[in-house]
Length: 232
Image (cartoon, rainbow, N blue to C red; front, top):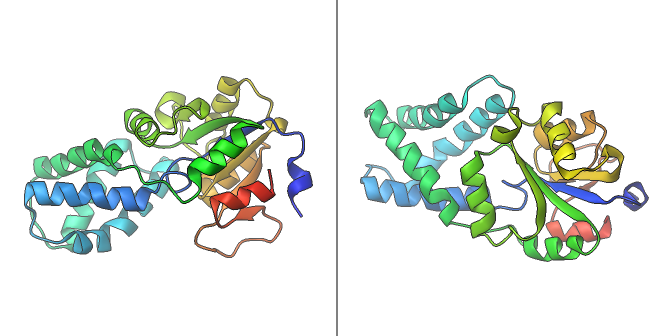
């Protein structure tokens, strides 16, 4: 149904977190290490019960420039601790956040089929990353997970100065890759940041719909990474 739409494409852009790199699994492991090391008085399950939704909300607001990077880093810890009724200092909360970002790239579970689909695609296309994550953290994730050899360029929001879905980050990525927008496809899991953002600049898209969300049937989508083979 969609394969004709992607004929003659030359460059594929991927989101990183939640698309190739299994953020939730790796994040849980990193926080488990932090909680154990700092001897915090609650389990990883209790912590994640609140943190996962709070973090997602902060990232949505961060992508829309409603909170700063610093507000994101402290706010998601502070709000989680409040719901856990755990009182501590700002310095301690910052320590939790800093340790988490240090440990996070040490855990590198990828989604099933990630390496296989990258190996398949690199035979036919130039591959790239566009991510809203922090520069040094994202670079370590890509390297430590064994994906650094696949990508011609990596664009992150710190380098571009703006975040998805802002058109400027996509323009920056296209310029860095030296490719015209009509020759590209963006693949990602976030309907606002990845899909609408890319469509607004004229990129074709494939929505990684792992959780089977209800979306228009006209939107090209896959529920596993290996399903991309049927489109590209």
